[in-house]
Length: 278
Image 1 (cartoon, helix red, strand yellow):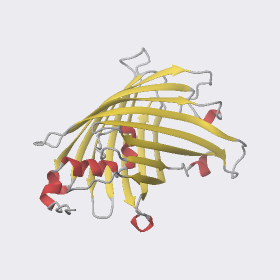
Image 2 (cartoon, rainbow, N blue to C red; image 1 turned 90 degrees about the vertical axis):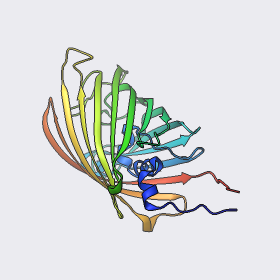
Image 3 (tube, rainbow, N blue to C red; image 1 turned 60 degrees about the horizontal axis):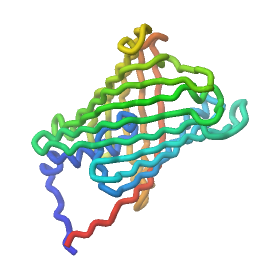
């Protein structure tokens, strides 16, 4: 057995894999499907209960998901969400309300620039007949292309962007669109920056969505979301990781301007392949 030599700081700063790990440590960017370059054969299981539901809903939503690196460039992921009455408000019942499936192809980073690409498609559908407040009543097909690139490596500053579409189809459930949610097919552009600090990570993401290219509705939604991501290292184990995310949201859309804050704790179980170097 030969031990790996530790990378020097300047090597870390220029290595695409370093920034891939940074993105992997920022769970609020998961829906952007940015390239992460997990090791081949690695699987990650996670759960992030919506604790804000205790104050704003009759039901607590509990998503459970999995991401697996099937090959060096191909990733598959799935997420199943359940709900149950938390007892602090009116309501009764429990069940499954949402399923999300997807696949992503990651393109090898350029050694000269550190730019990484990914492309894929996600599919999301409601399950059963959940309470109206828990579903918009539509299926979603979401193709996308994403990219990330170190901006100032010495500052551990990373830029990222995702261009995608949200294609809706109706189900037997009633429509129940949320505030400033577009009611038809839409094109979405998200871009932002993330930085790695010694004790936490930060990100700032701007998102623009428009239905003008897909329908006569011609609606637009713009949002700005800053976030602070704090790993709870003292509570972590050999194969587990806990992440606290504090975020805010400012949104402008057809229903006016809205502000919001959120806090979540994400639990991850990591399974890494053993690699022996001889």
